[in-house]
Amino acid sequence: MIERYTRERMGKIWSDEFRFRKQLDVELAVCRAWGERGVIPKADLDIILAKADFDIDRINEIEKVTNHETVALIEAISEKVGPASRWIHMGLTSSDVLDTSFSLQIMEASDVILEGLRKLREITGKQALKYKDTLCIGRTHGVHAEPITFGLKILVWYEELGRDIERIERAKEIMRVGKISGAVGTWAFLNPELEVEALGYLGLKATSVTSQVIQRDRYAEFIASLAITMGTFDKIATEIRHLQRTEVAEAFEPFGKGQKGSSAMPHKRNPMTCERISGLARVVRGNLQVALENQALWHERDISHSSAERVIFPDSCIIVDYLTAKLSNIIENLDVRPERMMENLELTRGAIFSQRVLLALAESGMKREDAYPIVQSAAHTAIRDRTDFRDEIRKDKEVQARIGDKLDELFDYGYFVRWREEAFKRAGLG
Image (cartoon, rainbow, N blue to C red; front, side, top):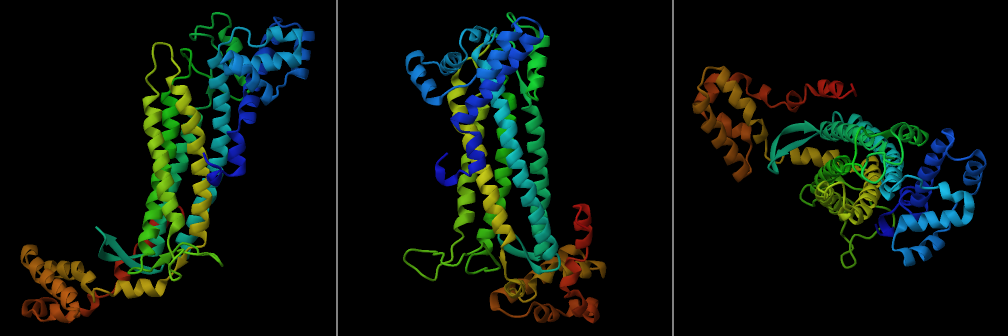
């Protein structure tokens, strides 16, 4: 991922230095397990644990000759360790080291992502409570429907973020595995107990059965959890982008002092960060397709997945981390305009009360199919001619006869949101 979107902590996890350090951790964990069994003499094990190290430049030099990164790492370590290095990588294949160390990177990256998401959800919950009673129009198909509160709108985001967190937590546990089982997963030059012990040193579990690689359905599930989360982010950003439109103007993403909206038009205040969220969310969702394609490998494995994973995993984690920080700032500092929300709420001059009038007529004994066109006609006339819906519906004699004495009671915004406390209670914010 380009530096522009890479935050320091996450970027470090996906650096070459960190990746090779985790691979070294795997090699040393296996050496410790061999040492416990008396296979590696204590003196040699002590030397390995004390001296095992590498220089990235030296790894790159060796790889130019070997054209094999793991071999280059082993040789670079061996140069530091000396004769005792003969025990390093004993019984292993490259995938033992690569897949296991990759799981360690995913554990670290997941922790960063989850920390950010929990903070984002906390911020979102606070904003939902802040605007719990702030009336605004609910829209379906982009058209005014019935009143809600802005807090209820945000509460939907809060709930969905909770599910996103749960999905990533589950996917993280699915990825909390390694494999130390050799070339085709049969432990031919190892043994199952050694695998469990070595992985235990690393905080990982052994898969019950594997081929030469950890099966990529696990990897696909992890990327899927990130992709779905990015769907949530895109959903929130798209809503804010709509609310920031000049014709709507109900809520705006933060606009810093000295910020410019356009190189040409000084009046512009564009939802640029929300648009960036929508754009980068597409990248992560696109990466899911690659992760799904990586499930099908030849026989016990090929390496068609490897090159793609070097791109999609760092990029996906880095994007999610970056956008979580951006969205947190947007929601925490959202510029909300309650007065404009009320203006828009009244834009249709009461037509949004049409269902209350319809149901009142039905309760009075009028057939729904007879009541509907009466209410619809009055509502459409009010919207088209910019007249008051209440005045239009009063013109109908049968409406006057049936509900005329209580018509005014129906035009109450509070009726639509009277159960909002229940929604917050269900979401755990009551």
